[in-house]
Picture 1 (cartoon, rainbow, N blue to C red):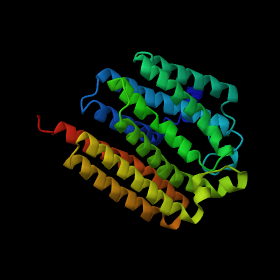
Picture 2 (picture 1 turned 90 degrees about the vertical axis):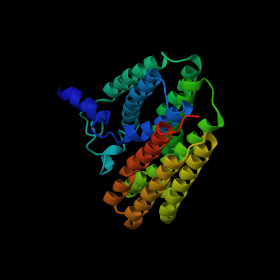
Picture 3 (picture 1 turned 120 degrees about the vertical axis):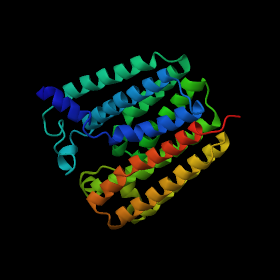
Length: 287
């Protein structure tokens, strides 16, 4: 039981925020692709697969960062950094989780299976990007957003323009919230040489977060207009814009705890967008 607890901590099962941030865009995509009536099989595969792949991503991220995390205040007690789980155990756990997720994908069509290899490559390589570029948040956005074209492929068998608009919206959203997340660790990252958009943007960090939230909302509005979504969806976007404004208030002093609160608030951002989307389809008058 002690080992299982450490594995659960390594998978971040006690912190579901990452799973939720990964899940909301997938749900946006499934609902739009299926006009509000997604296949229950596809829905189950993507929800379970999201949990598995987020867990696998956390494991491979901690494996990549095992020599850095011990020097960062927020991460020094993680199982790998603290030596409670070995690197070999972490790799075995990662492969078990990734294979379980791939087994689920194998129940879908060939096109979606092929797309899953791109998603896997993004997930595996993302943790190493912070060594070489100040733009790992963009790479994270691509990794988190790849579930969107996969969802469209699984539901419809093709990738319309809306799939790529939602993908770009997800990428921009990830840059916004992960920059706030990186602001929490900025001082430690500067000391140990880890790169991030929080470091790259410097004092323009809040303005850039606002810009990427605005881009996210603009792309979501464009997507909604293309598929004929109406008042409820637009209302959800207005509430999401208000939440983005609240995050700017939290970030005003660039304090660690408040930056982390701003990051966590993005769960509500994703949820209200989905709520407006789901209500729009649910209450739509049949034509």
